[in-house]
Image 1 (cartoon, rainbow, N blue to C red):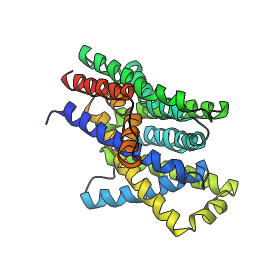
Image 2: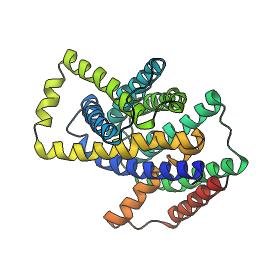
Image 3: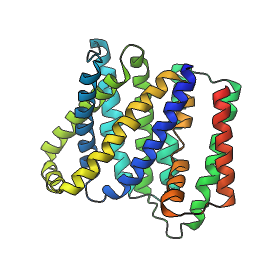
Length: 295
């Protein structure tokens, strides 16, 4: 299979995983604060990825020169970026949540890829990217009209924008490392460095005792474990695989489709009937994906 097609397919699977996880985390995040959620995720992901690496026989060696960029990428994108993500999750309206937290980081990653990595997509790919953004606008803006009691707060927007910048630039930092280091190994070390920072933060701030009380609920623990396991494999790992096999701005555009998949979840599981404008948006997005594949 062509590497670009492989990368595009993996990007779409990663997007589906992120959409499902974000839907579940919206409710789970009501009981645990942002740093606690990120700490649990990084510790669990580190263990899970370590087991997978040992089973598959992938090397754990990343080389001395790669330690600093991997650590910086993990701390910036996960320990800080994801904590900001969880902090903003309950402060934003569905419109801002979709536009800033879903579309924003991936598109900014693509922009950073253009600026710093000199990755230039073809003309057809540019048209496909524009089509995806146009289709997303059809899906996102109808929500605003129905949101009579907007929960958007200035603090949530600031946190979301900071999360966007941290997440996007962390992907630029890690991209060159993936030339020499297996994706799953790089992902594990990003998680490990993040986990160490967050555990130390929890100890020194004494928040870790509050986290322990919440996590003593076995049912809640099971829900977190399942959701974060899906996020680790389907989200973090596959997103890095995607950007390894295709240009960053293309992978980023495809991974900005979370609002589309969330809409599909609403149709399938909540009996939601989409409007004509939303159906048009879906058709335009599909055409955009086809153009990217051709490009």
